[in-house]
Image (cartoon, rainbow, N blue to C red):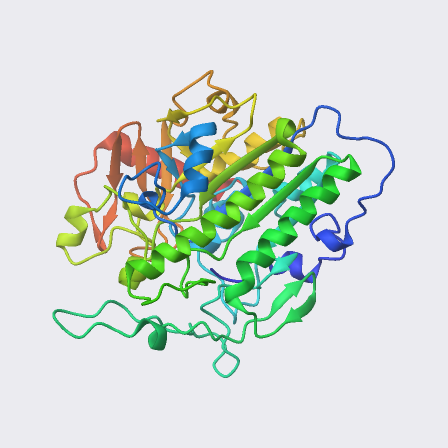
Length: 445
């Protein structure tokens, strides 16, 4: 995950609603009315099969599985891109990377971020009277870029390397030696460094504490709130508080899953004890697992991409195969979202922006085209289909970054580029859809 929004880091003081410690929680009078609160939790590099409710082989997500039984689980839910920065930019803008300008990951050496003329979800909700806070990778309280970046002596390079899988019958790697968590990342609160190097083993608990404090203070103020929690889990290096006795392979990954699950459980418990009836909690992921990390990567479940893997490729993160962008997703809102429902609607992270704006009784920014849609009817059990067409941009595996060269049409999916080669046999209808959306994206703001 790159340094996603330099825009906010540099202009954070003017966006006081974004940055929790600068927020005025003491504005007199109740402005909430019937407006709901929103808690959006985004996992990093979590596979579709890492959720126990999705995949019976997974036994490490008790809190998330409970949330699934108490709300709605989406089994055909997709990230807006197959890598971190473009996916997260799309969540906060409701727009694909070709529109919002973020088509590849940012890193330590990046000199720009989300364009200043983009309007984020938090900015829209601030205008509607909301207090907003962000915890995690990008701003407010968290680390400024992915925690496998930022070694002070070699800025811009991934560190620690967590090398790719051992080849053939070679010796297995030493996970503790090759994937050290001793990195020189700073931990920020607003624009102030509060810890450096950050202690990754205590980061999950810090996130939980800050999130629950924010919920309590926002609830006490009487103002509606948006809280976005961008987790470090399940990206390497795995920040696990309690390592298994012999941290080998899947046992280490399972420990990381359990820690992430516990963090989400703490946030949900706080919601349940303070603002349960009026708070919508949405959990999902930014992209699929990083297959090159082998036993330190998550599960794609049944989406193993047999054709792709037989060619020596990956079916997961960075690719437009299902494992790269089909992610776990849960919705929880007691009394509003039906209980213990599995939805097969075709939905996307892009839908979070317009759905939240509609539920908040706010207005979408003018002069912008949005790629997501308001899926409130799906959430409340009144409609099922979701999208008919969904586009998946290239995210580094093949072709131009951000190019819309894979399209989902109802139950069918067409690839324009696979393993770097153009597919010659697209039917004219699908080819026309791709050409049309690319043409519109260049013509629109």
